[in-house]
Length: 230
Image (cartoon, rainbow, N blue to C red; front, side, top):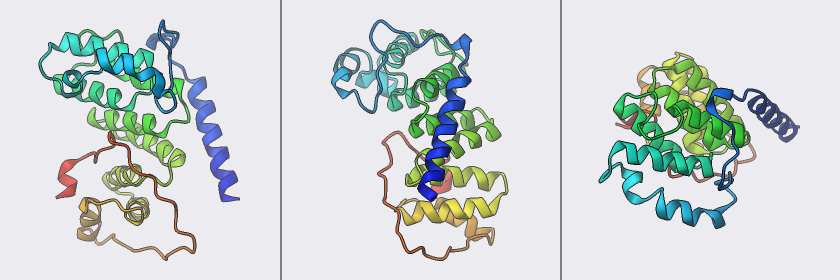
């Protein structure tokens, strides 16, 4: 029954994402692709060799206009390219720009396009949530992380970050539940646990008979606040 409910939740999320396409973020049709980052590794070479280079990944050695145009190419070919989404978000937040110079769309559009293209991709939802959090839009960030948790219930980092957001909202019961899940899946950073302990809200949950299968966090999934890990 739990598996059925999860599948229904994923279907509802996917349907909602497809129905909320934002016209101002452009059509998804592209001369090359679009391809799914999770399943079309055979098409990645040309994009990552010439556009998502090491310089672009680290934001060094090139102008921001060049970085923006190369990220744009990458994300039009692979709308849910998780590492490129992370760099687009960091570049926009660093420069305090709603649109990175050289990019065709506003930063948030690339996340909207990713979700529209791959509504079942939990990493795209989590990346979107991370960007919204960086913009100070906590409620919207939490909504995206709720969706990511439903799509990736056994991802330690996604549970951890969702727990951080619930803690900020002072929903300690939800924060504790997600923290317990994250740590049961092997999340290594003690920040959220320390916050809950300091607040007197840390409460280990009864162990379940079935231990969930661990999903290795994606390289682009980072704690929303580095200070939380101290």
